[in-house]
Image (cartoon, rainbow, N blue to C red):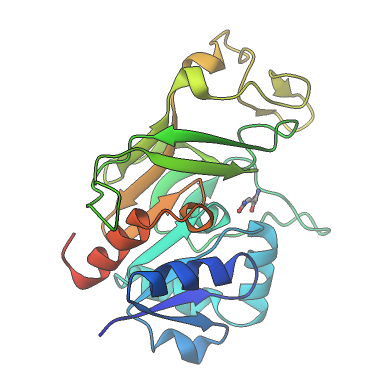
Amino acid sequence: DIVVGVLAVQGDVREHIATIESLGGRAIAVRRPSELSAVDGLIIPGGESTTMDKLSRTLGLADPLRDLIAGGLPVYGSCAGMIMLSDVVADPSTDRSGNPQQTFGGLDMVVRRNAFGRQRESFETDLDFAGLATTGGAAGDDPVRAVFIRAPWVEKVGEGVEVLAQVPAAETPRAGPSGGASDSASGASYGGGTSGTGIDLDSVARIVAVRSGNLLATSFHPEVTGERRVHELFIRMIRGEA
Ligand code: GLN
């Protein structure tokens, strides 16, 4: 049967392992490059993308993982994991020498970190999520309870990237350094307020779940709410059934 690896350099590894096991799957923590060859699919957990980037490079995991992703390995990233799968980070953090954080990439999209704002660091909402199947007590089309913790959103997607879930405009929390608008020092804009071009950012739905081929990513953390349908979808992707 299939083995699902969970990248275990940093982040909420246990919760993902527990969710896969609750679905009857086998899950292992992956810390070394050699362990990558034992898995049929990989989960990149939530945590801190800058730390994950540094550690996975130090441990020699980043390059083999990039190759495996390009070769079609199924990978699911939640929150920081979504950032790690994105080809472009809109507002990368930089290290002391000024080098921007790196990602594994694979998803043709632009992600914005901490996008829902820093004052209100977390929130929960119910989402419509495409492509889920009935799992345990939950029907495929029941809403997903989504927990966002300093979460990214997807700002732009390329042609091959399918949008699976969005936070409706009305439910996007007002946020940002001082209730919205933009951070002039970095040029970054945040949810809430008005953009430099006068667009009311609260009127825009935000993309929070995507799929492209064998890659799946969510801004939120299904692994912390007992939600199992997203992991069930990922298992079906690994099996070639979805
Ligand atoms: N803000 C984090 C980052 O940039 C992600 C937060 C999370 O994974 N809960 O990596």
